[in-house]
Length: 323
Length: 300
Image 1 (cartoon, rainbow over the protein chains, first blue to last red):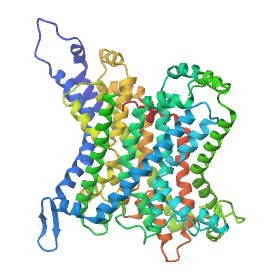
Image 2: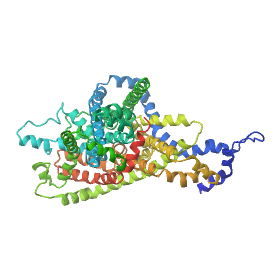
Image 3: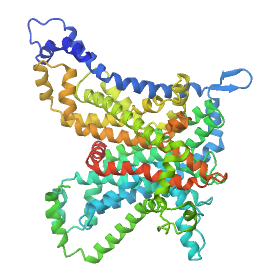
Image 4: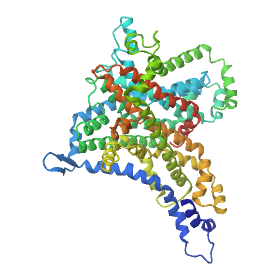
């Protein structure tokens, strides 16, 4: 029905658009000109723009709006300006969460990405056999929901049913401290490495596959070592892919949620409700019903994520331009 | 990956005298150890799904025990709490299929327009949408919950499906794909033949966009299937949970001290079941997600 309507209005005009009226008798553009220039593109865009506005722009705006208010027991909801934000910046709980994810960002992300780069270079090189097996095997954890991954590792770390503790017990060695205060962050880091290395490896590998082999065949004939080819030819060429993995990793680790939330159910006395900023915002909203303050926390977190990935892109672009 | 293309260089490498077999074996050992690291948790999951709750605690975690209990565990998963696991499974499928089909169609339409039409506001809109990729979902989750609850959509399937329809990354992929795959001449030919723009999209463009479409479909499907944060917020009715929230709920119960540790075997067997469809899907549709990742890395 809709289709034929559009069709009927549309048909005769397109050709006149394609062949610009040259000189002479140029008439005022027919309404169809406007249809083709504005109406039709926006008609096609409408569904996307609609959901984008309703479920992206609107919540963002709403979060900003309610973060300027506070609910009081007496007097209801009142405008407090930037007071919530002031509170966030002085909130030790928030900064403790930020410290945890920042540590992950500084340690876990480089470890994971270097690991992924090494694996992708090895799979791309000719030294390794059974490459499809390794590619798939390494990538498999990505197919597993992060909650299930967190559950799995939670059991593996467990002092009761975890095989690692069983092994050390059998050998009369001290049990590994996965679920201790100092061991917790590395344990969570390991979950993330396990889950995401394969994904990052595939992104880098796909970029490696796109390099024409002629680019390094000559170098190889000249006797350049595989290591030098990787360092001077392959890695510089896949830099755009590496940059993408870095950006996605920054965004991902700052948003840490499922892992500490699952760990909270396993070792509640070890993981606080503010272990990551995201978990903190969630608990503020759904345990303490402090929606306004929670919105301010979410907004600061979102701003931190946005600004840090943006800074990274800027720095990277500038460096790219200089070299 | 075409064998013919790299066959030659591969042969050259094999006879390369400077690559002693010792290096190759060392690399292979390294690759195998890494493979064990990635697959060990899955192996543990498979082994544990065959155990009784007693053996789970009493026998060595990385090998099967004498009492093979898989069938009982499966029965337990499907019958516990009136068979609610099947409801969760169905919910996961339902949410993921609806989100994936809807999101891919919307992204295909929009990506096609961005790739093939010039219209006022084009660059500005595209920049805005690309910027959205960098805004963390979680900054949206709580306000989204509040908005949805204001309009009474919390605790309905819509609360999960509608927000999943927003895929800036999918739009980005479709645009890049449409730019590369659809020739302008073909569209013009259609116009001269008198086909409407709508018709051209459905019967010409969409067909060419097929592989890109499947890629976005796959990414959105996996994204929704694996989503935990959003359904956790917007549903508190167990019959609306997807698998991720349901299993995490069972785990919470099992970890409690109310003597409900029997649930451990259910969580483990249920987890194993929940990842099997995805793993099969990944194996069968490798080409498509690899496509998506390659396109993603085209433009830095």
